[in-house]
Image (tube, rainbow, N blue to C red):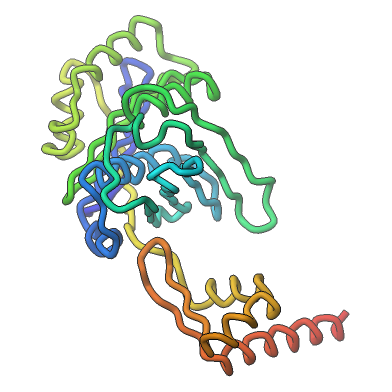
Amino acid sequence: MANHLTPFLIENRGVRGFAVEITEGIPELLGWREYSPDMLRLLGHALAATPLLAADIGEGARFNLQFQGADGQPLKMLVAQVDQQMRLRGMAKCDAGTDGDFQKLMTRGTLACMLEPKAGGADRYQALVEILGENLSEALEIYFAQSEQLRTRICLGASPTKFAGLMVQRLPEGCADDDWVHVYHLFQTLQEPELLAVDAETLLRRLFIEDTVRVFPSRSIALQCQCSHAQISAMLLGLGEEELRPVLVEQGRIDVTCEFCGKSYGYREVEVRELFNAAKASAEAGRTLQ
């Protein structure tokens, strides 16, 4: 299983955790955009963090780690998104050659954790993450401490061929202060190069060599886009005929490119007309049945 999320429990310390390893599908998903090394690293960190943050999401839900840049900022947007089936995708929109450390890239923007429930579920949830610390890991740790009141440590790593993440959390019950201090100090010794160089189970054995670490079955992560012809058609219907008409007049067709994977969807004028006619017929049939 090349891409996976692995839950674990440090049984004698009352600490749970998750490990993420992603090695397949990186060029296919991200290769259509040209990212600087710094941007690729930041996006890789976000893609590694997102399954960690979404490990407990409910059925049919989708979790987003999303950054929106301020006006004039080189990094316009960064999104990492995963659903309950662990289908993961991400992208960044930025000026050509954008680089710099975490604070330089994200200062003045807005970073948020967003949970979208399944259709008909509860209201959408959004929590802002302060852009503090030297990297995304530290910002997310501060978020957990302030918003979730949950002691958390996170380490993230990214290279052109691997994204990885490790997170430990103090359980509300069963973790004494000394136990958390013990785990905290061991975690402090972990650096990004080691995270990228070693597989998760080996890393856990090395890092917590004196402790009882129970590793649970891994869940597969699919690094793939979730775009489809049906989704694009629904988006066009949502825009409405009036919004699309100027484009059709000028170009004779509608072309949509997925921001995540770069796949293009083309609609000739006749296909757009058929799309809206079918939607109208379906709506009329629904009113007749009522």
